[in-house]
Image (cartoon, rainbow over all chains, first blue to last red; front, side):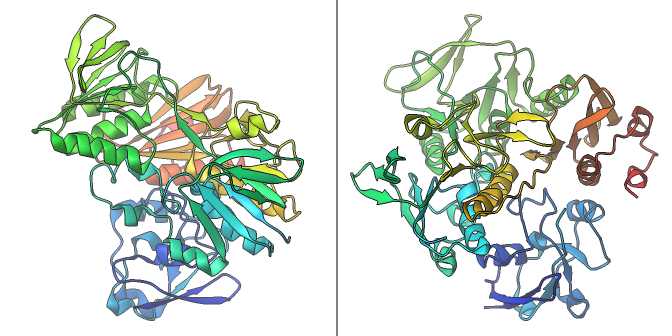
Length: 106
Length: 408
């Protein structure tokens, strides 16, 4: 099962095995990793699962779609590697993925 | 922080409360009692992707049951609590078993409002709140030769989302709304009109100012008798007439009730060892400025975090502006804030298009924004509300004006 690495804003690291076909948000929720709120449960409605995909992994994650893009433009502290983790569907190629969590989702 | 912390109710609030309790340092047992046979699951998709068959029950779970082992939270599912004895600090289950508690959390949620109509007990009449309700609806639909005919009583969000999901399945849907317009209780006329048009275009028949006198049929539902004397054929009737909080346990235990289980800003009930969170509770909301009972997932989650802190002896009140969402067809509605008491409504963008927003004010104060396929404006509205910034009518109505500049 792919291993996903979550690094919170203070630098604490957590790793979680996440099934292929699940997503990076769900991996955090299943493993009670703080910093991902996911208030809408993955409906791409709230942007409270914002994360930053580590630069080294940019080409391994699916492209941003328009609904996600609209939300990303208005998250707190957006960066060019900002993503909504609910939209990062896990594949074998993402084994080892590193995502950084923002200090706050609001 | 030792002893049993018992959580009654196993839905959104409980799913957040259990891990938050561990984070706050609760070391004793955490026992979650739920009357449904499932681990906590996402309720909003019930009337959307679960009804339409796009999501399975497994995908509905907030997290798999086994995930709770990591925080050592125990579940007692398919069980109801009969009573709370505050003197002995214990609860009694419907099987007679008694459990003692150090701290008790009431996350009992809400249930559909029952309407006293002739014929509501007929087979084929459903409410919509649980997985079992949806499975019942689907079972009745599957029995029918398609296209099945469904009459939905109530033109609120649940009724309309259900109409959209069933329309997608090829069902002939009629929505009956007693008031003059759909969504009358919760939105401005411009939004009601928008959804009336969207549904009509999709082929859903919406009848407003239309009461129901009876649901008719022999062995099962066959038709609905409307207040104007008209009869509408129906294979299935779904009633969406709002929800009522589950307060009975708390009331019987002598806790204060005020449009829900009354709690303070820290989710504390009138008993210092009992908290309440989610749909079942009402509380003085700092930002809204009055006692409210909010029916939403984000509220249940926020209150659960506050409750976990309270149970562990800390006072945090992270009140945020409420937000809600509704998916119907390809329309995503996101609502920032709570429009109660509004006296002015402004439209940003073209309300004849499929992307615009509606801004609710009380005097100069921004209360809420309904965003139709306008995710960016929703995010900006949330931030304006959080910062207490009130945009001027000129700025709101000028789509060339970048709202972001107000947030800098």
